[in-house]
Amino acid sequence: MAQSQNTVVELTTPGTSFMGLSKYGNVMIGDKAFEFYNGRNVEDYIQIPWSDIDRVAASVMFRGKVIPRFVIMTKSNGNYSFSTKNNKQTLRAMRGHVPEDRLVRSPNFLDVVSAGIRSLFHRH
Image (cartoon, rainbow, N blue to C red; front, top):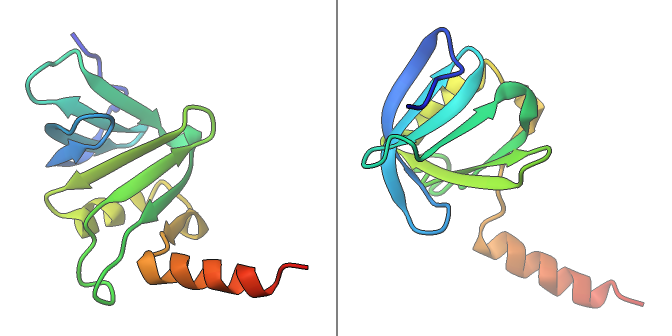
């Protein structure tokens, strides 16, 4: 049985983990960690302590009205991609544990294309 790292739960919401195949379950934000528990297999879980999170990048569309998913970048274990029923509410709950300068917007398609075009002209 999975043991939660949190002693106080601030938010629990249905969510999806995009690690390999999509897994559906619950996201739990608490005082010590961000946790995802698979709905079908209790032993399939992801626990990320707040001290291990380097930054959180969110995909922002339509001037902040829609946030389809976010990525948690850790200091040692790579990147984890998630989506919840209400991503804005989830990111607001994370704001109390992750410094404001570590919550960033991920570049959208046009940003990536324009950066690529600019890099073509700035090469020597």
